[in-house]
Length: 134
Image (cartoon, rainbow, N blue to C red; front, side):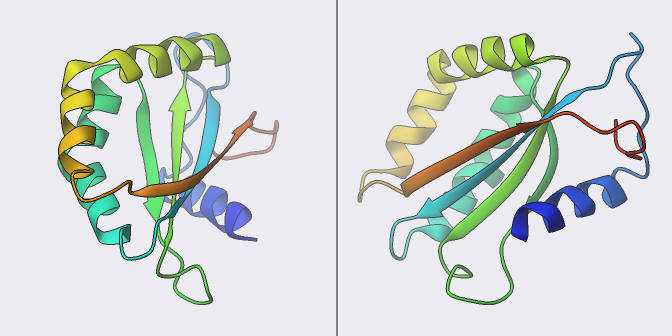
């Protein structure tokens, strides 16, 4: 349910972005992080102050970020949507991101009092031919 809401919100937010210049649909990755107890605020700070800019630096397009309003996951869950030119570009971008010295520094600094993330889920999507977000 949260995944569907996130994809819908991203499509609405992007205002119906169409296919990229090459005429191909972009690939979307929906990621859900479960934060360790009491660490969601620290995780959000890391994204806000470091991660999003480093993503962009490596060609990872920030599309949407959100946290649940209700339920047992509202205090420990961050979900976000990235877009890439292709699945291969996503693989290359993630490798460059993981090796980035700015990322390594930000990650280490944010985890001096313990790991922030307990679990990461990732799902890649292709837009349908009728999707306003391509």
